[in-house]
Amino acid sequence: MTRAFVFPGQGSQAVGMGKELADAFPVAREVFQEVDDALSQKLSTLMFEGPENELTLTENAQPSLMAVSLAVTRVLEAEGGFKLTDKCDLVAGHSLGEYSALAAAGTFAIADAARLLKIRGQAMQAAVPVGVGAMAALLGLNYVDAVAVAEEAAQGDVCTAANDNADGQVVVSGHKAAVERAIEVAKEKGAKRAVLLPVSAPFHCPLMQPAADRMAEALASVTMNAPGKPVVANVIAEKTADPETIRKLLVEQVCGTVRWRESVLYMKEQGITDLVELGAGKVLSGMVRRIDRDLTGSAVNGPADIESFLSTL
Image 1: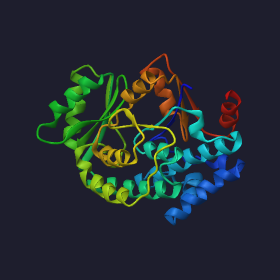
Image 2 (image 1 turned 180 degrees about the vertical axis):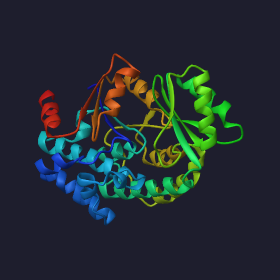
Image 3 (image 1 turned 135 degrees about the vertical axis):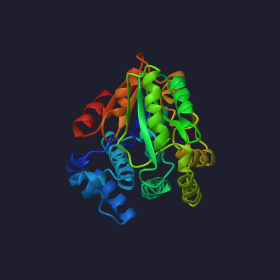
């Protein structure tokens, strides 16, 4: 087998996500109900109906995206009559998507993943006062050049590479003034574009240490099983199936760089040729060919995608 299932991160949320699934499949409704019950919140109503500004809040977006990914997973399993891990060699997720990947692979219960992501979202939001931090996308620079830009722009503040998404698509994160300097330095170094991102906090940088400490506490009390197939972890861009290693890496992930480009290339080295994105949007599947043109990427979001994918198995 040469397939990996991958799971999207923040930014893929949209009002209405999961609604078609819930309308069409009882097992999807069960997943959304399980998440609502775990959080004592009608998160599914927020996902289906909005308002968008509430769905976009980090503490809502993170468990919502996991819920849609797991609804797609459970529908595939129910309609196809298999376990997801029987149909892949590896799983991976972008930032919060790593929790979705682990839940899909059997490491976490869905309710535990929902509660962890609620805590993660709240802790990441609370780690830095609004307006103190920022993130910016540097387009047209490779990762090494982007790291150099961040180092030059720091000037005693925090400014680091937060996401290495694809060739020419790196995100930096840190103190707002330093990130604004990074935008100017990047333009001088030949970036095609360098723009501030509309995010509420500087994710995946050392300023998130209070959130990492909070996640260490939260993860310590959660039961974790070995995943049915190894997960390619964001912070090491390598596979692991050891629950205690996964627990440690999920803590490191809060402040660490999301090494997505390297993770995809690592999956290729492991023999993967096809990455199938499960959940909301098509961000990860859209990046696959930018990372390596030999790989194929596809997205499974709704009932039609599920039917189409199952017909290929």
